[in-house]
Amino acid sequence: MRCPYCQSEDTQVKDSRPAEDGSVIRRRRICPVCGGRFTTFERVQLRELMVTKKSGRHVPFDRDKLMRSVEVALRKRNVDPERVERAISGIVRQLESSGEPEISTEQIGHLVMEALKGIDDIAYIRFASVYRNFRNASDFHDVIDELSDRDGDKDNIKNGR
Image 1 (cartoon, rainbow, N blue to C red):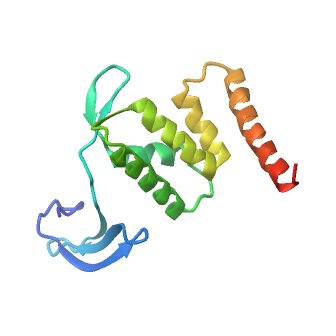
Image 2: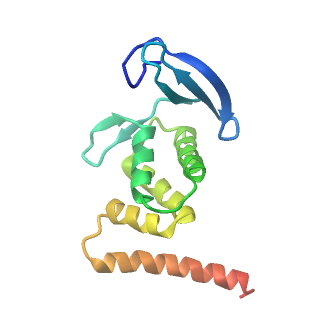
Image 3: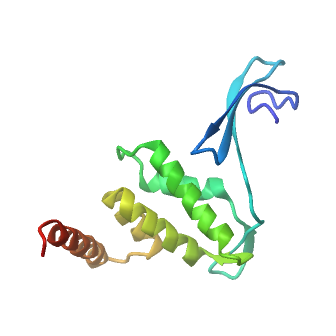
């Protein structure tokens, strides 16, 4: 593993332990050249996925890009990082187990929307504004109404209605 600080290719593993319910190995590493310490994560990859963009272009699936887009939606929201990591892992598992070698950005966006709906309403609205390409304020009202309808259904269930 290359050192992110000095780019030396000779780093040493100091500690390994399971993470995310055993589906990931977390490794603490140290660089003998510069003394830098960093963490890496090792995950099982079931298959190589390709993403079909709206333009028709095909690019390799990038888990880190997915994580960054979710983190942007969650910026300044008080959400447990472990919960976010579990959601991302769940999305990736769904994509890998679909059996399809190519997935569309729409499929990924839909899965992210479903995950965010269960994590944080504000992040859901933020992501929806980009994913659904909002043009005006009424688009925000529509999504808020969706969430309100869902919350109303939950209240009815709680109150036995």
